[in-house]
Image 1 (tube, rainbow, N blue to C red):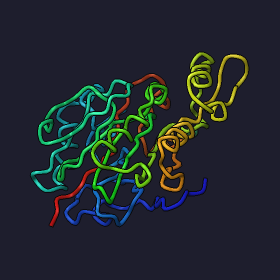
Image 2: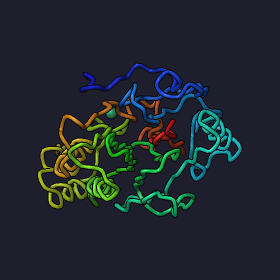
Image 3: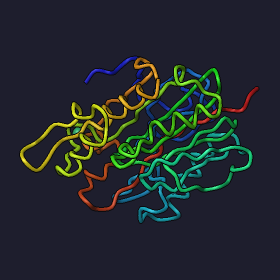
Image 4: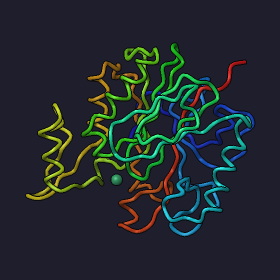
Length: 277
Ligand SMILES: [Zn+2]
């Protein structure tokens, strides 16, 4: 697979990319290296969790040892200034986008997206096959993070995310998007009922659905997301894809499908505006 425009897959420490005090020995993927922005798609290496959670699991709800998850978070937080606030949402595969502002800081909302213009706040989404989407309007200094599984894609989480960014002053024509490691069309096999929903409920999604026999189909979830972002007025060239399939690359990323219904950890994708100075 060929990297797309401005995608840099050189594994390197977060320190070299953005923050000089990042000491976590994790490997992250950066869509926008060298920009004044905290962001990254973390993989599964660099933490202390064991077994199916090995090793950088950030979810307290996946059955992992609380102490291990706590240590993983502690290591990450130690890489940022002490006042840095991490915001996650309770993800439910819907299309709600939580606005993180001075009033709502510290609130855990039920949503699948977050946007903010606040500095020193890091928005994080947890995934293990679903698509993590990071959004950035550099001029407006507004960021967003979305959790986009197939239900969220059908529900229009991408458009809702862009709408919420716009409400904070972003301009869709300027918004850059990065689609992180997620299950690829190579591995995302679904039943015909799910495939039918894509072809009937979404405009032009048919070309991203590949029938496999009478009862199954493969869906290119990122292809659908890309179309949705373009329909929301993003420039096609501003959408970066990290072409890694989590299931194919299960040694490096958590994948629910690869776990075959068993336990698995969740990896963190994050974005935030560093304090000004
Ligand atoms: Zn695959």
